[in-house]
Amino acid sequence: MRNKLLLLLLLFSSHVAAQEEEQWTCGADSASGFVFRNGDWQATRFINEDALFTLDGDKGIVEFSQSINVLDCKTSEAHLYCNNDSQNFILDKASGRAGFSSLMGALIQSSSFISLFQCIRM
Image 1: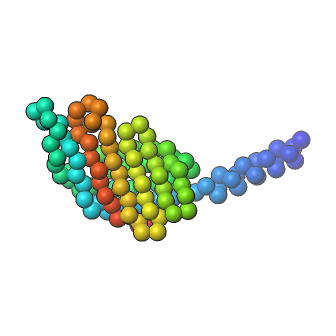
Image 2 (image 1 turned 90 degrees about the vertical axis):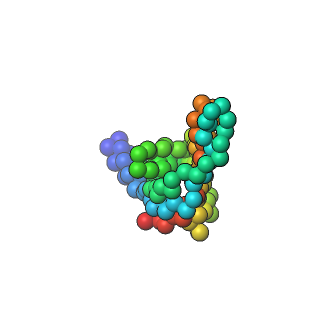
Image 3 (image 1 turned 60 degrees about the horizontal axis):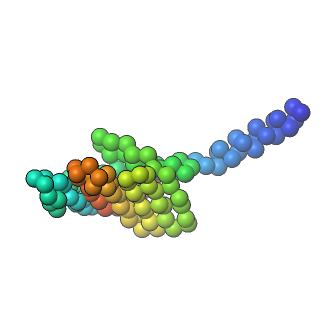
């Protein structure tokens, strides 16, 4: 029984070690979207803000200077696709091109935006 427990522990620890974090630093290229002002949607530019993206298993974290966004991710050999109820992040692993969008503002008449990035794997 003890040997089985040790074997199980070794298998689990090697599985955990194999799933190391993947981090990308992303420089902002452009950001634009819409704000709801005076009863109408108005196109506007947003401040370009760099981001840090961390993939940890099937969870992705997009960190900006004043917000942390947790997303569910699916990966392929070439791309990362991540989202939650109102946000999306997509990344091309070969080119480092990425995009992040937030659409919650469409529901609460606030703001919705998309940011485009050039990312480098750390």
